[in-house]
Amino acid sequence: MSGDYSISILIPLYNSNEMASRAIKSAICFKKNHSNYRVHIIISDDSIGKSVELFLKSIDIFKNNCIFLSREKKIDEINPAVNNWNFLLNYCFNSQPNSYYMLLHHDEVITSNIKFNFKNSSNIYILSLKGIASRRNSIAGRFLSKLFLIISPKLLYSFNIIGPSACFISNKKIFFDTKLTWLVDVDFYYRTIISLKQRGSIILDNQCSIETFENESSITSTLDVSEILIKETSLLDLDNFNRLIIFLLQKIK
Image (cartoon, rainbow, N blue to C red; front, top):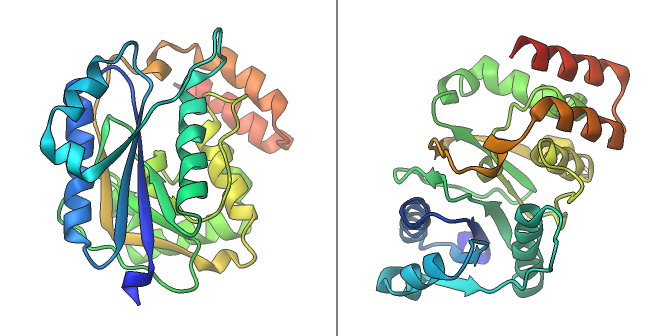
């Protein structure tokens, strides 16, 4: 049955040969460890210039295992990073319409010692994030996390218990909201979860995990978070409780 499944690992790149190489190597390792699934590694480079793409294409293991896409940027494009993510999703939805997918950023890796198992009835798999995995992977942690996501997923806007987008594997055809920057991930998770007919089909996987690395050149590191949250919470249909929690969390930070 496993051979019927495919998963697309979507990797948006931005200005880093070393980090890009590390992320792609982890995706290739995942592919080799899961030969019973059809694994596609799809890359779109959003860097300034072509140096990162040319460097990666010069390495045979990357060239032979990955699909490289070219995205034409528009002049004065708003939120190019999120547009690049949606570009990858759109390609995935059209070329692999029944595929599961994960969005793996260049400052993240999939741990190499994993074995991932699909279940027939599931639309969403949530992977562990290294460092907090032990808390969520306890019996109580998994129960409470799943209860949180099933009963009140809108609380994700206040408490991101999922982690980065690489922790979120889905087969639902949903795009990121390009109007958002800081809440873009949790908004994507929320809209995907509420689109499910049966939220009980969410699986928290305690074997497969994602590791993240410090990235000083990250776009989000340059953002004024408080100002952005005021703007983004006004765009979203959030209740007063969520708005208050977001405000208080920023004050604590």
